[in-house]
Image (cartoon, rainbow, N blue to C red; front, side, top):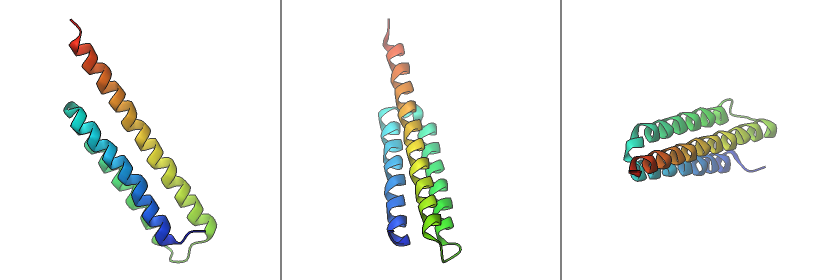
Length: 100
């Protein structure tokens, strides 16, 4: 089992990817700035919550650490799905606006 520090780093990587995708959404579709900022806020809040679960109590069992990691994977993937869906919706709206 990886150390708690390794799990913390990996969680940062997962949620950083969601943040980067949110920023890409905002840059590509400025009209989605509010949604993109919401995705960043939600991802940061989720990551902070999961990181705090890793820290308390100080001694976690391997199964508890694995559960927290699985939750981080699940939440970050869900967030990225939502971002992708928002990008697709924004593209559809943009295409509709360009039709004569």
